Image 1 (cartoon, rainbow, N blue to C red):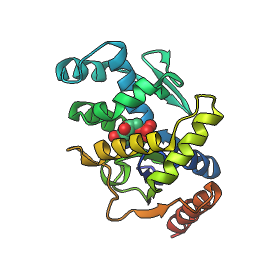
Image 2 (cartoon, rainbow, N blue to C red):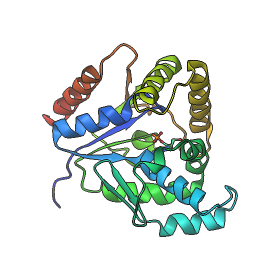
Image 3 (cartoon, helix red, strand yellow):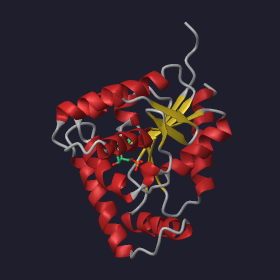
Length: 223
Ligand code: DC
């Protein structure tokens, strides 16, 4: 059996900086970057395109079992369509939590994520990486920040990318709403795994967070 390469699993709520940090950690260590939220977003996009009702489990099951998601770096292609930008739309963002709460969707995507990580050598980010998808990961992180800080960062991102000016109050409300759905759903709710290390990023720079994770990785893999 070839030696399994290490896995870094990073969970946390929306807007805690997971994507940025995960990409940088992967680049620093020469590992593959796996954005599992993008996979749920791709399915949400397909469900919206097909005008399926959220309670039409039969049709959603068919759709998810036939969906071919290809992740290449940050590019996301589903059934041959490049949806990299489309999956970040407000429509998809508004529906994705409900779709990610469906057991049938999670079962299929978890299977695909575990297949991608079967040989290790990845940095995977999501909500259930540490607890469920990669329970044997060498490094487990729960990256979080206060709702206020996450809203502030989101406001800056939206303004910088020309998507408009949004009030902090509105952003705080939508972040808190998404947290609630993600952390109270029945299957694999967002929750810090017992053996994950919590990093609260409010007063840390991106580089400081990346450095901490890279150091933890070196410590674990040097043994
Ligand atoms: O990280 P993100 O905002 O792109 O995630 C999109 C949605 O998918 C979010 O509502 C949480 C959900 N998700 C999940 O339930 N499990 C994962 N492993 C990753 C994301």
